[in-house]
Length: 378
Image 1 (cartoon, helix red, strand yellow):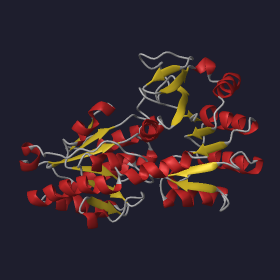
Image 2 (tube, rainbow, N blue to C red):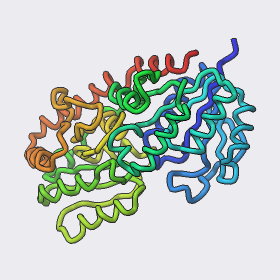
Image 3 (cartoon, rainbow, N blue to C red):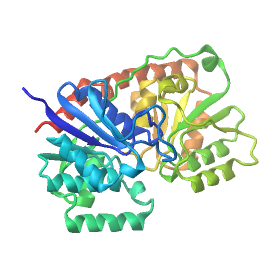
Image 4 (cartoon, helix red, strand yellow):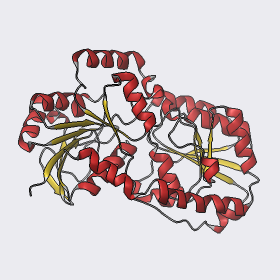
């Protein structure tokens, strides 16, 4: 029996990593389904900053990697003619897109796929229809959505969402008739943590923020919280690519001139992620919106408890003893962190153990693989 052909479009793919969650989501889908489908990926030859071709790759030709095919396109080949050649050459049964607003890696090939009569077209908006996401460059996005709806660009496709919250976001924008399939993102890494004695015994409460740095992720709020805590016994290390330089300059202005430990640490290489996360007591992530929140799940899978906003699908965390989801009020975050400065060691150890158990049950779970498998079945 011949395998069905699955063609995936994504703006960035490994060895690119600065775009974070979507790359991991797609990679995990590919690893899970490559034996059942003939998988091919079309992506760019650059990382999120788009400055230089990724090191060690061949461009503009199909290559084989661990049971699937992929092609990295340089800027010269990111055009309608070449994209059409690739789609026709591949002759896919299913095409899967991973952005709403990408002209090159969603809109152009999606419209081509519809004209070519591809059997099944799936689009994962990756949180781009959330309120906070739509408030970034809102006029441009509203215009795009208005045109898309009037011309039916996204009609007769399947939407892949990771939660009921994201399903609601899709239907709010594209109507109740939108065909939406919920399949939680596949996670593969799980680490039972042995807490470093120095971390457990020390007086310093070590917090980590790691994400792309832009207004949606709400780093300024996290900095304001630490300033209000105003303790030499709290540190905040910041990791992530600087996506919005103006926003980052505003963050630096908040940090300037204060005698507190708030430090930018650069970007975490994915290979070192678990080791880095396990150097901290809590993730601090007061995000304005997440449709899924890879930052959160990766922390929990590394047995790292979290302090997050309520703008994610991960709620009622205190009941599971894995952290806290709080309304976006600086006073509430400040009070919680101040309280955690005096947390008993055994209570923290309980949270670490609970994070591992919770991840095994609710994040790294075979049922989510089956949800994704059904999404791609014809």
